[in-house]
Amino acid sequence: MVEKAIGITAPKSRLDEWYPQAIVKAEIADYSPVKGCMVIRPHGYGMWEHIQQYFDGRIKKLGVKNAYFPLFIPESFFKKEAQHAEGFAPEVAWIANSEEGERLAIRPTSETIMYDMYSRWIRSYRDLPLRINQWANVVRWETKATKLFLRTREFLWQEGHCVYETDEECAKETRLYLEEYQKLCEEVLGVAVIAGRKTEHEKFAGAKYTLSVEAFMPDGKGLQMATSHHLGQNFAKAFGISYLGKDEEAHLPYQNSWGISTRTIGAVIMEHGDDKGVVIPPAIAPIHCVVIPILFGKHDEAILQKAKDIQKKLKWLQVELDDRKGYTPGWKYNEWEMKGVPLRIEIGPKDIEKNCVVVIRRDTGEKQDVACKDIVSYVKACLEDIQKSMLRKSKERMAKSIVHPQNWEEVVKALDERKLVLGLFCGKIECEAGIKEKTGATSRNIPFDQKGQAGKCLHCGKETSTEIYFSKGY
Image (cartoon, rainbow, N blue to C red; front, side):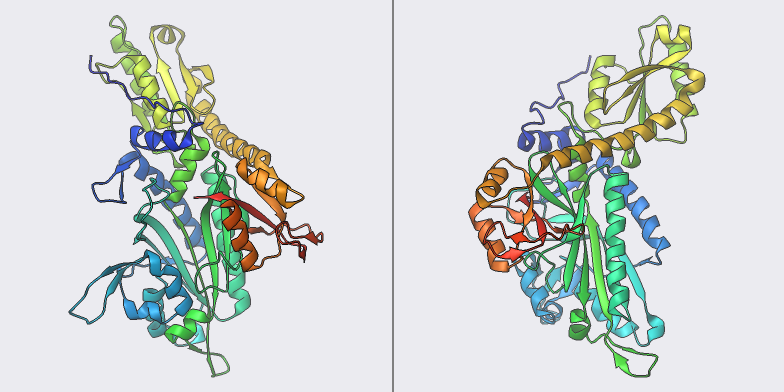
């Protein structure tokens, strides 16, 4: 017997302990020998591939084309846009570069290197709109403790960068890309999010404004899932991007940038996992179903053949046949549950007699005897139901986490209890800084859906009608 203990030793209620164990033991990712970095294993990278495939297809339908730009960015490029340079200064990793006489940054984001090229490519209104995206890695020199997928020095993402003739067109598509992110988070990842606008204090460095979708994790912390930035004309001015309009006059264009990263995988793990391990939504599952033949000797050949037949019937999915020797069925069940595979199909001697199989849902543990002739339709319907159910549970949990305090004392109490606070806020940068200093909480975003009722800011008492979300964060 070659079995060994592989289970997670901490319950999910102790998320700080559970989370890294769930990722490493489910073979999603592992710690790299390079400090602050991680290795994404095939089981985890398969999730990212599904995210890529879905979102890449969506943005291509919107006219976005993929390209690739250098990893290295001259220091002088950052200095062209002062707010941007200041905002990223603490996170930039630099390389001494004696050949060219200035340091090179390892890409923390690509606005500067891309916009230098845009200034060469854009000449006329006929060149607009320009919509380009790249799938890439970025480096942000985090000094805090590594938290797989949530805080690492290198991570994977996509970043879209578009250029438009008018402010109205830019604003429209800045919102459009955010809506695409919301669909991705909810319909594909099964994670409920709040869509809204970042405060002036939390907006992207150099942007006119920033939109975001925010999740709220089971440990009571907000998690920014994706952002879409309206950059105005700031970068066009800094990088000399202009075009000849229909009026034959020179004009500055408007720009936006938008991105989502492998952080989304961390959100999926925290949102859906349980004491047994990871639970993966079918839409991004690297393996949709595992077939486990229960072999005892007498009917092994027939059982194994039936297992192969079932695998063949489900060939439109990613199906794993686990016929490994030296492991008990129970050990295999635990391993695949820990890895979060949405469905498990068991086939034993009694099932052969009845010409059926047992199908077990990972999300609920529900078992169902299913006739072999019905397996395709049942699995299809079951996977669809799991996907919807995971989002429904996420939305229900978020709704229960939101509180509406009426005064500062209630705000402090709610934040201490790791709740998601929704209340009136004046929007002043100094007021927001005061809230963070006193509670450690930060603003998540200003939701688009506003009631418009006037009242007093929960912190400073000034008159306002703007509601905003606050919580502890990562």
